[in-house]
Amino acid sequence: HLHQNEISTIEPLTFVDLPSLRYLYLYNNKIRSLESNTFINMTNLYQLYLYGNNISHIEEHAFGKLTSLTLLNLLGNPLNCDCSIFAFWSWLIERSSIYDIGSTARCSNGTLVKSLQPAVLDTCHPDNCLQCFNGGKCGAMGYTLICDCIGQWTGTFCQESQCTSHDCGFGDCYIEPVNGTAQCLCDDRYINFCPV
Image (cartoon, rainbow, N blue to C red; front, side, top):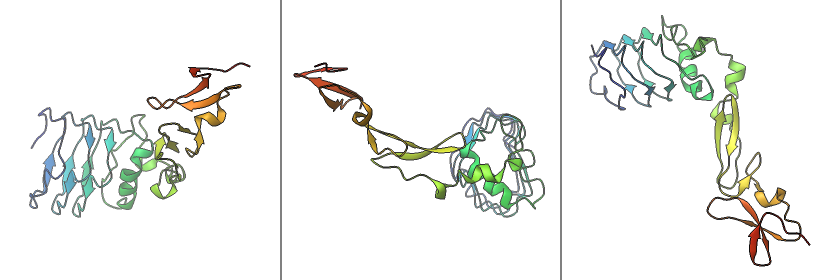
């Protein structure tokens, strides 16, 4: 019984050495997210109560090998249901035949996590991630995968230099090394545009 203790964080592997634990009450705390390996190898855990927290994000593998789990109560948590929910949604769908697993898990807008459309969430699957170049990282913006570009690179796949689209007139384009923005070099000085 760890309910109503103003707990805001649970470190990964906190419960790993408690294989006989069968019921865990963590409701009405201030937990904001569940990291990978938060609940792992708890093979005898039957019921897990997490309702009434502030959980918005559940990382992949937060619930690992909970083979006996029959009840997971997440009521009253504002789950973020963009691409970050994909791993938890997949875990729930795989266990849809198990009684009361995820039936209380709702997105912050009230939608049941289990009812999210597979066609939309399939775009979030890591195997569908974009090929990003020049150090760009594939990430999610809502239900869309995008390349997050760094430095001077821009464009859908981080393949375009800012100088590609920056008009300097009769000067040369230069990328500012500190902030990665394009500037024009005209007669040994930097300005926005080089006239004749």
